[in-house]
Every structure is written in structure tokens, then in C-alpha cells.
Image (cartoon, rainbow, N blue to C red; front, side, top):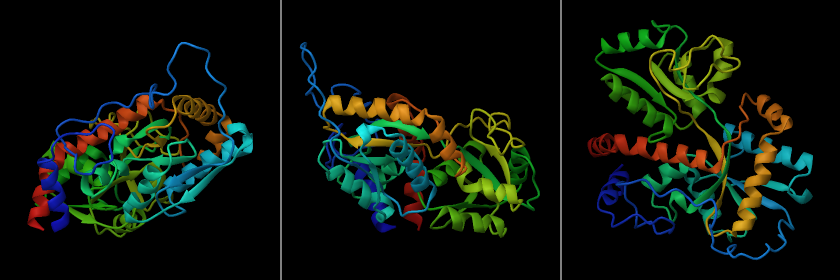
Length: 353
């Protein structure tokens, strides 16, 4: 925790935001980074003449998943890459998934950042890039990568023990307001789910005591065992337990009710407007040739919009849906701002630990 506090303090006195550099000393929380350029990413494709024939790809492409195999993020990326491979996209070359776990995703993200910007190393893009940028001593910033596409919006659920004395989100708020302390389970300190719980406690004036675990599965076990009162994680992480009746899902942070959870209201319907979740995408390090980048954007859009990909995602309780680079960047920037909003409380918690 002392190291965490030191990082927080250093953020407050950082000199200036570097829009594209990998200098860990130029970090600040004053303003979100500029939107990435979707054209002109490297400045190599300008001019008024006829475009040269694109000599890409000529070999297999590595896609780094900065987590161990078997989790929701890994399975979703494998569904995407397997679909592309099976249907012969990318000139028939293979998308090879490489799991590089460790360091809370820092190791894999660093490997992708340090790879040659030639379009042959891609990265699973999640909000963990933001968390690591802010809270860890990384060589990269989250905006050192260009989003190619969003492909897996995994909406957040608000869930609780099956025998909890509340059946709706409003009943939970009413109950929690009468408690001195509400036990809230998270899959880890400063994860997106922890941040969203902090936002909710702040919005509703509730006193949450956080019980941090090391994974979504441990978090789920806490709720199933009645050791905590409330929690948040994604549909992919909670749907099976809901179907088994071992937890109650009070609301889903999606625009519409989710297949398989049709009886569960959206957060908007429950009176707590929230659209959020572990939206997953794919990206490439900045500096890639413009023509290569545009090829990646167009090719992944085609893959994501196939019925085969949507069917593959359904087999893992996932949603396959295309988001443009601009839409995905907006999601990342909103996540950045939500962390900024609770940063003083995170700093206070670190100081008191």
C-alpha cells in the first residue's frame, strides 16, 4: 500500500500529459488524453498520388492476451481469432493467441507496447490498461495504443446472496441506508468493479466496507457464501450462478435486458442509471503504418459482424457486438474519468491502510 500511495502522490505532481509517449514520469490526472487519430497514426500514408499496394499481412499475427488462459477475456479473444481463422480472413494468415499473464496484465501489455509497430503484434484492450497506467509504474500509457475495434461488451451486474433480505435494487438501497456498514465484495483493489461500487456508495451516501479478493471466482464464492452483502461483476462472470439460483442479480448495466437474464431489470429500469461493464476490444501500438491500421480496422469489423462470431460468443455466455474505434475510445476515456472521480477516496484509503 505504501507503494500505491507513492504512485498516487506522484500523479498529483506529474509535469504534463504525454499524448503518445511511453514515459511513465509524464502522467497526470488533470485531463483525459487526447482521442487517438484514426487516420494519420504514423504520418506515412499521406500524399495525393495513388496508394501503393498493401503488402500486409504476409505472415501470422500474434494477439497478446495479458491474462492467463481460461478466463472470460481469454475465451472471448479466442472466439474472435478462431472465427477469423476458420473463415479465412487476413489473407488466410492465422491470428495466434498468446497468453502473457502476470503483474495484473502489466507484463503482457508491456510486451505489446515494446513490439515493433508493424501490425504483427496486437493486444486485447481492456480497462486494465487504465488501471495499470495510473496505479503501477508502467513504461506505457493507455493511449499509447490505437483501438481497432470493440467486440465484446460484457455488461455489469449488481448482485447479492440468494437469501439476501432484498429482491430489488431499490430495496437494497433502502436496506443499506439503515446499516452502519455494508460489506461489498470486489475481484481486487482498484479493479473497474471496485471503482463502480465506490461510485455507487458515493452516489447513494452509503458506507461500504470493501472485501477484496484475487479473482471474479473468489468474489462469487464470497457472495454465494453470504460473506458479503453486495457485489458487481459482468454478465459473463455471474450468469451461470444466477441460472443456478445461487445468487440474485438485482440489475444489469445495459441498454436493454440481456438474453438469459430477461427477468432482471436494467439499471435504468431499476432507477439507477448506469451503462457500464468490462467492454473488451483489440488494439495495436501507435506508430503502425496508416494503411496497415485501416486494414486491421476494416478486417476486424467484418469478422465481428459475422453470425459465426456471434454464435461463438453465445457459447461462452458472451455478447458479440461491433464498436468503432471512436466508440471504444469513448468507453476508455469514460472509464478514466470515473477513476479520476474517486481518486481522492482511493488516496485516503491507501493512507489509512
